[in-house]
View 1 (cartoon, rainbow, N blue to C red):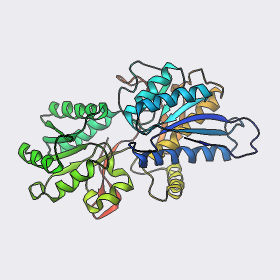
View 2: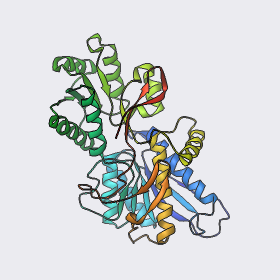
View 3: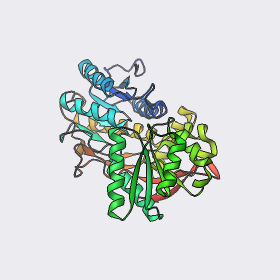
View 4: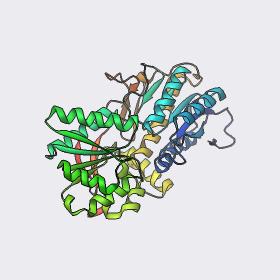
Length: 367
């Protein structure tokens, strides 16, 4: 629970922005750290140039720890303290709880990195999202598998609205093209038993719809060492291999596992500059989540500049915002089936870590 304050001596009162991120277990702390690094870097850059209309930005950070109830309580607290808007969050189920409460309180929320399609039950003008919806990314992932000849796909999964939604997207999209998806309960099966089921089902791909590092890492290790599965494609559409922690835990076993990455194949000048600054701040390669964090503040700042900074109880017109982000021009629109304003052109690729150079990523499929 910390506040990132603007430099002293800025004169005018700060624009306070509530920031949500998973910064302690069982949240994915590595993702939260990258998200916060992007948010903080963008705030520092804007403040160094005079802030927004002469007022500095101030991040009021709250740790959600992947807990929807904790996130809802944080939204209530931040709204009560008079923040101008909310930003952040990585875990989809947590972001859904935060978005729903923010909409109820009529507090603007720009969601950085969560992908669950149903981010709110009802359509709202209060919430916008930078990351692509799960249905878009996971259909692309299904096409990647099917085009590569995988028609029998196994998914190791755990109970969660997010995992269930992803499994449904894969199942429906594969069925429409003659493929099949079988679900394996990762709670009830040991990693070795998961491998047995993959062999029995004659699946040629095993997807990890499970938490990181447990049980994702043990399942990968077991599959890599099972001679019966020598030709198996292991996949992780949710992006577990994106982070350096994956490589540290698995080494070479963690390479060659396709996942969804929300970065263009080549960054432009802004993206390269921000990437270098993020790399220095994190002391490791920045993930796409760090870029999402940076773009979140860039977009919010532009909305405040163009529409006014004193809008705590007034909807920001997200649809009127257009700004150059690190990953391309950001503009929001209404997307069928999505209740929040959506950046519909967010980049999506299927990539993996190169087995010859696990610190490098290879593009395998592009949407």
